[in-house]
Amino acid sequence: MDQLPIGKIASSAVIIEKGKLLLLKRAGHVLNYPGHWTFPSGGVEETDSSIRDTVIREVKEEVGLDFIPTKKWNFYESIANGKRYVALIHLGVSSGKIKLQKEEVSAWQFFTYKETKQLKLAFAYREVIDDLHKAGLIE
Image (cartoon, rainbow, N blue to C red; front, side):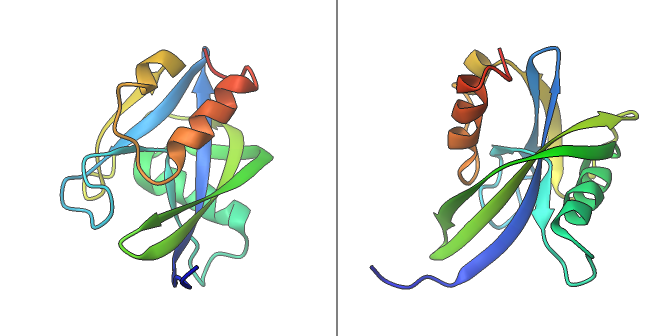
């Protein structure tokens, strides 16, 4: 197998309300998966003191919510543009009112598991959603 460079290590938030999952639609101009749906998520930066801090920062930046990670869920790998991407998934709770970061996110919505089947999802998020459903966390 060819070695692939690391594209990004991301920290992703799973926010569930009433059995539905919050997903964000990526803006049409982003490099990877434009117009696809994703979790609130973003790359680990050198200024982040931990992976946990990354997910808290990214949720605040992308949707304006205060996010408290309550459990590390799993990690998932995918390949895009010849690079390997790793998403570290956190379950948690949020508070506040959604306010989108228009530069990266064009829409948001809470979805049931069945509704996610119709979506174009970014990275390895289909696998994440399937695992959340199997665990009984989303409808």
